[in-house]
Length: 324
Ligand SMILES: NC(=O)c1ccc[n+]([C@@H]2O[C@H](COP(=O)([O-])OP(=O)(O)OC[C@H]3O[C@@H](n4cnc5c(N)ncnc54)[C@H](OP(=O)(O)O)[C@@H]3O)[C@@H](O)[C@H]2O)c1
Image: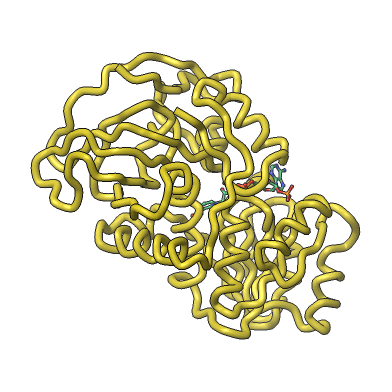
């Protein structure tokens, strides 16, 4: 039996129910993993609220780290006793243990703790694909990154610094801006204090940035397009402030032949080998010290509703971990 957080209907954090569930044995291509730490992500909020609808009832959570307890037929990259971590569908990580498909479960290097593993897989593999698999990016390029003091944000700041990329962050308070700067952002603008697009234009001598990475969505989308250089790339990868309204594609021409993409991690990790390679690359970045995983707050698994409240109220910084 394993304590598991489920929802039976979409809604607020009060919809979480803690249940004891039978876990069972892994089938073909599956593993059973005993969680040591669980990661919290904004996608969990979208799934809980119904912005990303799910068939209910359903267990929740997309990211965790732990120890492999049993392996099903055909699983060759993991064995019983291995340390492992994952960001993967289907939701169900908010649990003491679970049975799940093995393809996206990755070995966790010895030098990375379970907490770090749980705090880095979804957010770090996202940064990996944003910087290496979405648009050509290299030394000297300038990226605007919104919510730079968040879970994905603090990893992105450090990743950019390690690749010689100028990252201009935004964040909702001056303290959060300082945190982003401490993690490698070249500049950070408090976007709740005045005209952030004008400030960004000043910082780039009026030219704008090569790439925008925008997961705030509704509140920043239009400003993000205005912050780009001609031929710049808009990567819209989330909606923390609400979904982006429908786009008149002609706007991209008017603003200077802009490009736009709306990627998700789950397309990138769908292929087993690609997923394992992304996790390995992330692990190397962490082990080398280029990226340190900042765990800003911890909650007990039983307090998952409080963790969601804090994330939605913009009270968290860095990654949030649920302790098992
Ligand atoms: N597409 C993908 O593959 C993918 C993968 C991972 C994450 N994401 C997206 O990346 C974003 C960051 O994820 P995360 O888990 O690391 O979360 P997070 O950045 O730790 O938290 C979200 C942050 O967004 C900012 N925000 C701005 N307006 C907000 C609002 N109205 N309500 C709540 N927050 C608001 C807040 O920072 P400030 O107070 O500084 O504004 C908040 O701390 C999310 O949008 C997530 O969905 C996308």
